[in-house]
Image (cartoon, rainbow over all chains, first blue to last red; front, top):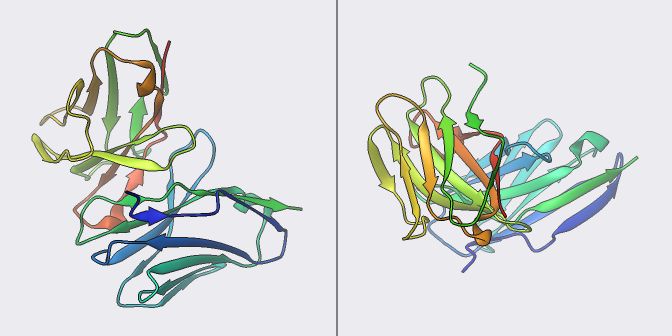
Length: 111
Length: 114
């Protein structure tokens, strides 16, 4: 059973536009959520996170929104840049347990 | 410190051989996590270790797989009698404590079983 779901395997966005990546979860015990970015042949790198006590966290061009009642979070990238092209993983944790990852969404930003 | 170091980057093994994957955590990090990424899949948790202790191995297959993190030296993920289905990218992450936000990943070891 997948506790963290990223239902869109891929997304294409034009440079300068907004990219919205979505993530749903089923475990109501999750209290910390993270987004990781991964380039080919490299390990995932941390991008941004949010605690369950918040509904929004912003860091430069990246904003994560959390809707606890819907068990849904999203990552907004604006404006999107070609260098943002990568696979984005949503991850969640319940009380400092090891992170549970989604399958990832491949973002392509077209110049 | 260059970060989490994994070696080898690529490993080819014939069916039935053993595979040993090494992970040196970042300096100051005493928590190590191993994840596996199968083709077209996300990262699946395998095992969480602290020095000389296995804390959580709920994601590790019951047979053929083992992990250790000795007092000295890197963490080792060992796969005995490899099968084609073991072909995957294996990532190690380390953190200074149990905090979820502290993970730093290595570049991974890509295991190919032929």
